[in-house]
Figure 1 (spheres, rainbow, N blue to C red):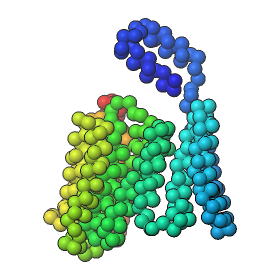
Figure 2 (cartoon, rainbow, N blue to C red):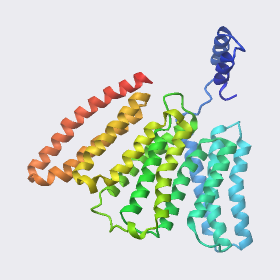
Figure 3 (cartoon, rainbow, N blue to C red):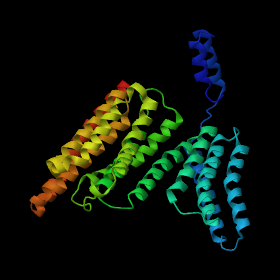
Figure 4 (cartoon, helix red, strand yellow):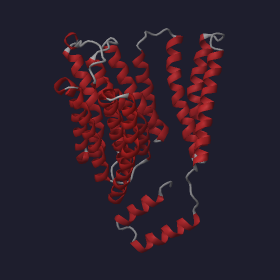
Length: 376
């Protein structure tokens, strides 16, 4: 068993063995069992090798695609999708890291196979449905394998499919509503991934979602900031958009991340509802109170993320909230202060902001991180 310690705790809680026996078993296994985890160089080598293998296969097929018959093309598609999964199954429990990497490449190849199959049979074009089929394949692989690459792909493909469907539904119109719904959905999804893990022990899939959310959240926050600044987007086409389309868009953008949070966190999902309210209000702040009001609203959101991290003992939320606060202060200086000063005074002020403000923020961040780790 990969996690015998968890089963040992379960048996102890059930009264099947006493505490002394559990301690003796744990000490015995700890002395005689080496670490089954891969070191990071091995993980990097396996991940890079899987990436190069998949890329090489796809490039080989693309280079010889025109010279192949339809039957040969379809056979290659099937072999490409099934072959990697077969190799992953052969690796199995003997090399778990290699097995997970090969299964992940097989799921990536499924996306290419779906696109190639559509090209072979000249299917009607609706590109979001291809991403949806790919996401279904990743979901099936996750249900069977329970491996980290599958949940990462699923976490990426489902939002990509929803954004694609929204783009098609609004006919690629670029206005305040369409960009606001897409930006709010991307931000809430990334924030949910990033904060889904609670103060208790995290599973592998929660750690994977945390990394996906941590990478996507700064980009999604930037998109949300641009969408909330209505001065740069096109004219408002809200009246010409059907009410059903708008309702479905907002329901998917806000409701689906909240549903995921409620399913996982249950009674502790109320901060996600607060975050959703903050996100929706942000899109209307400039219209109601002017552009300057955006900055204190972002500071409020950064403070809420920091407080959330301290409450649940999550230092990564403190770090992310501190980064959002620093970016908000810098953006305020550039947009509202710098153009009102002379060239030399603005540079001096910017230098002082980075030196003094950065030093003070770093000291505060360290104290908050220590406080968060103390509550973990």
